[in-house]
Length: 391
View 1 (tube, one colour):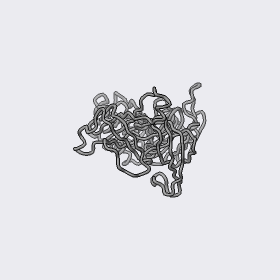
View 2 (view 1 turned 120 degrees about the vertical axis):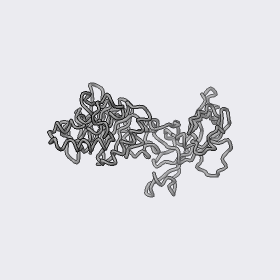
View 3 (view 1 turned 30 degrees about the horizontal axis):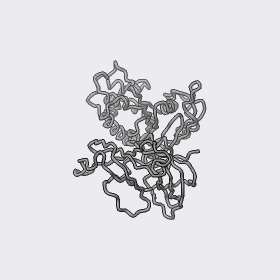
View 4 (view 1 turned 90 degrees about the vertical axis):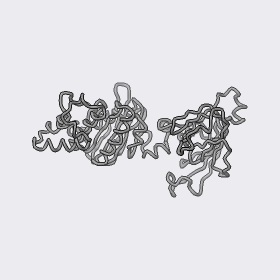
């Protein structure tokens, strides 16, 4: 599927701004972004429920925009299930086949096949009001799949479910995709959902696609400060590039293949002072940039690290707030500001860095680092990112 320069406005409000995407056959592809970013409108254009102001949508090279929804071979699973309350589960799933006037002898085995796929064989004669939220969603998925579409469109299908059921349904949805093998396009505002099941993700904001990539690429190498903030937790700082050195051997082989040039940059931040970071994007001294490092990439310890590596960033601070969550502890660390920053503004507010420490072993269950402790924070230049260059 190819979406090419699709734009859509409602009155003076531009919902989609020349969106272009290529979605591979059989891919589990997610449209991820906050409410109002345009992801559902894009899904409705693919489905045929909305028409773009201009642009192109093709399935296997064929333009589908002139076709009505029922001729696009793309079925939609809605957030509110859209089941017929007066029909049984069996009749809800059979409905698309009856509309197409399938022979009666073919309907029953076909419906039973799809009820088995979504694990609802024993609920065929129940009405929707006798089902749980997760069961209703499975009925909606079976009804959409029984048409054997080329593309299944899912518009925030799990948002009405509670957290545990949502996780369970997400696993089931991924398993169904693996069995069926057709293209899934999944709309969600939930980062964890998208990261868990997607082959690739398009992050959207204000009608624009900001980045397309695998979950690993989106999380580990965010293209913009918005993507970095939206996906997981981060520490984000404005900075100025002070020095750049070209590296002879890439330190990040997964991100920087042998033909890609990698640089070691030194940044100056008002809050922390000097920071080292590797980058595959060429930057120059004097440039204003945005720097980020994930909380789980930072090592926290009471003792000063003894490493001699030149690519390690090291800071001292005090535990301002520890939050124990069982499998991890999140620390808010008040950083001792560099002398230059303190001289410039003695009233500058305290700088807090978030650090996450995972509890992987039984011996880690206790809070060996507590409130008011003096600690050291360190991370490799490889674990931070430049996520934006300011004009």
